[in-house]
Amino acid sequence: MLESQRLARVTLRQMIESGNDSSRVLKAKLIARSDDDRSVVATANGLGELVTLTFAEHALRHPSTLGQRTTSAIIRARAAGRQFGEKFDDLKYPVLGSLRNLGEIVFDSSIYENFDRIDYPDEGTRNTIAECAEVLRSMTLSVEAFEDRLVRSVIGSELGYVAINLADTKLIVSFEMIRATGISNQRFAERVVDAFRSAQLEAQRLRLQSLRDFSLWWRRQAPNTEIIGDNDV
Image (tube, rainbow, N blue to C red; front, side, top):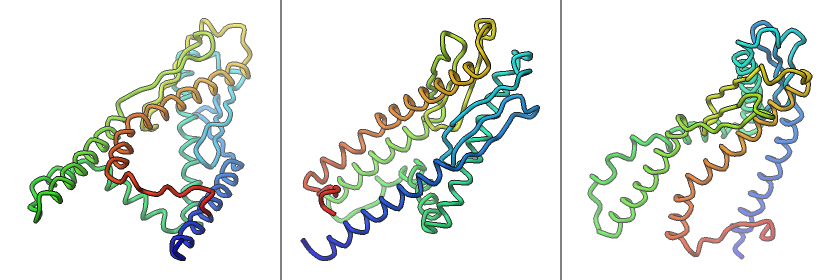
């Protein structure tokens, strides 16, 4: 094994371990936010993950707006958690800001529209560039479609539902308050959190599934690519 390859593997392993340490710190950081009248309080961690939900004693007295207030509290808490996490990462890993900007560029489908009009010197290069551009265009269109595709999870025994889009930028919480009678506020909140997490997991599964074509394309293009694993470090 060349020395440069060994150093690359060691560096990668160190980055992974450092990232795991950061994740543990951010998971332990809890940030609470509420709706405007503080009847619903959501707590998220520094990764933007919803941890707990709390309904005030008077919260269920206004059932017609409870879904909207719950949605507002969750969005605010998660946004505050993500903001904290980004600031933490930017201080620890200054290069991440540039990588986020690069990610926004890569997933802009408009930059791939004219790739097939460029004149390359040989047919092999043209074919490779064309196929690469097509895969990237397809992948970016899939990512853009994440905004409009919703995943819904039922709360408890038909107490309502939580809906999240695949981009994780939209949230809807809706309740059937007539069916929620006889359940404590705490138990009710726990079921909402469970439904939220279930919707998130399904959205994650669908995101990965929609990006599978890119991975398959890469494997076809570079079948002998060596994957770095823990045993190589």
